[in-house]
Length: 256
Image 1: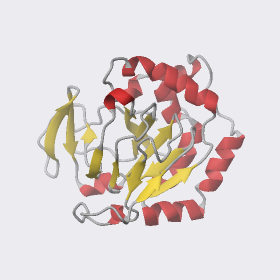
Image 2 (image 1 turned 30 degrees about the vertical axis):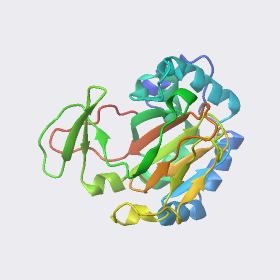
Image 3 (image 1 turned 135 degrees about the vertical axis):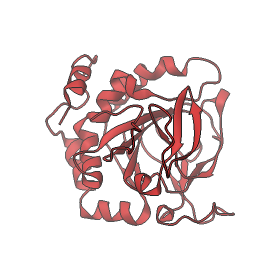
Image 4 (image 1 turned 90 degrees about the horizontal axis):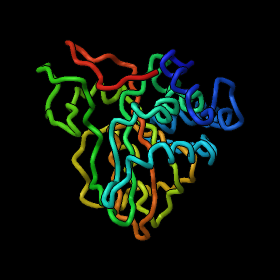
């Protein structure tokens, strides 16, 4: 299931991240993404799967990412597929068995981002959909718009068909509680292109334990408030897609 590049990355880690054999957490995740789980994901646009990673695995990834959060106001980082621990995690069986039933075996990780909410960078995220992808270079291609640079990497809004073919996995490295700025979602909003709702009464607050994984369609409306009790609330967001980009465009990072 690992590509040769991912095998080399994985073998050089300080400890293995769920090697090829299916562990008990793997089997639990596979069960969660059975027909009922896939139906929930298709209908609601999200699915929370518990106990995908152990505390030890979360600790390895957290330690690998610690230098990226150094500094009093750092609340995240991009380009994480270049970090060996994250690259291996993105290709690990425990995550592939969550991705492949929804996207197929050709799915590849195409972006990885870290989010945190420490006291010195306790941020609010307004209601939005994840519409941008990271690409290797800018080319004027019909259907691709809203070009921008983020950390010197070109980002662009692709056609809806590409976004609908993507799946986001949010890996919780810490417990997410009602007090530390949990994600809020509007269930079912990924299937409609309505404007951002004026109120939030219909939103669902997603709390999660360390090691759990939230599957989410990028077009799902989501937001989060500042933490009431700020502290580490580290989330690695992995984005997957099985599609190639057209007309000479290429993903900035791609790993499977």
